[in-house]
Image (cartoon, rainbow over all chains, first blue to last red; front, top):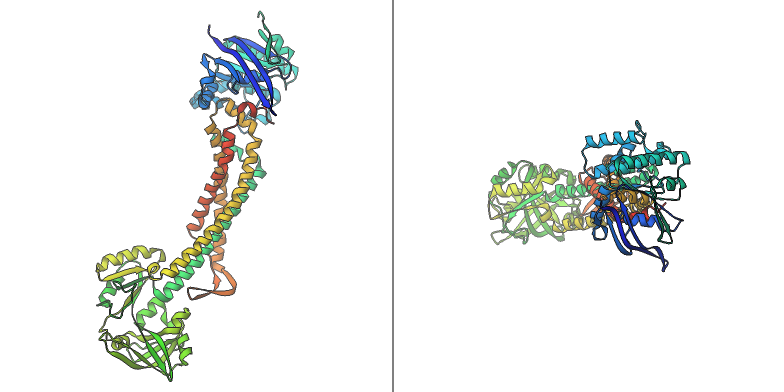
Length: 230
Length: 403
């Protein structure tokens, strides 16, 4: 099976205040379709930078990245936007829902960019809301929801267009452990049912314990890469 | 994108209100500025043309550039009838002009002899209202003269006195005659009033040996804005290469140019108002873009293209501008309407083109609404371009780290 993500000697150097900071130092990694992988490591180890680079949100200083078979470095800005829209779903630590849009409008946003017909959008939104346990909340605005509910909406938004990969940056960091566990169960179940690839960056031991692959980053390098049996 | 842009308007209500207020105040000021200027110029033009030159003039070709006693219009009555048949023409009146010397007692002065058809002149330029003392001409010629108020003062002439006019007739001979001064006229133009000696048209033709011919036909129209089309229509109806039909802008070139120059000054005033508005709008739009950096980063991460982010910022500003234009138009039109009724009395009267003004009135014109609307919309959109480009160029990874 073709890998969903492949990186070769990926390096990222920030030059803040003239002093170069090596965020990533030659990362070689292959992630297969359907993986449920956690990137772990202390703050500043390069987890978020790596997620940004494999999603095309940031460019590597050196090295190569392939996502879903496409070589990201050769893509223009607009092509990258389209590629992200069609292939990647994002779940953020701070949910990052658009506050002026309702739950339904937030979830259908990517489908709107994809020009999915209105009736189909509506059907898919209702279906995913049921899956994430938020039926009947389609017309609410994000500020009317709890943190856990907002993160469910964010997960629904990331998944509704059925992307190849879901990238989740510290998705449980702002939630209490009970809700975090519920959401993690939900994502695990979706991964099992749909075969979507999930990659988390996390500090959360609970996420680490559920991941089927654990990639430990330290000082911008892979310190350990551990595949666990389900 | 339109939905996001529209709803963003209501997120920071106070900021939106401040932005809109800047635009509304700018619109209203600009509208009153234009309405005031249009009202004032319309009054000036109306008085200048109605009192003196008329809206359109017909002459023998070349007369306007180089007036000559010999460049006359034949059969002016039939020409006048054709002119009267043009839709929108209110009145027409024939005139005769000649230079000469006028003597009252032992005082002599250069004068401009103006032959007028009393009935037509009254209908066209309200000549009777210019008589400050004495009377207007009789229906039939009776060797009567009306002097401009300045000329009467110089010659120390009064109603009931006699004036001797000496000039040259079209036959080449010296012409002179004695006239009874029956009235003193004040046109509002001091230069004219220092020279004008009005005669009955028949007397003037008799003195100058013009045999029923005239030098000028002045035409008054019902609506000032229709002068160009009526000029063209008269030209077409007369269809005579020996005749020249000129609108007031050509007849009074220097007056017209002075007014145009004044209007350029208005433009600078309007630009300053809009610049102040633009700076205020730029400030608030930049603030909102800065505040939403993270949100724009998220939208970009999800696949929104830079031009779509650009659109969100510009459309939001355009929505605020459109709302402000509607409110500004209500304020602007209301203020102009009030000023067109009550006007403003000037602390000191002023004279323009020889016409004295004491109260200035505004006007509700299409220009006073369209120009500020276009200016507010265009300047708001122009001002939003910089923050919009900034928002479109946001790097999503960096933006999502922002708080």
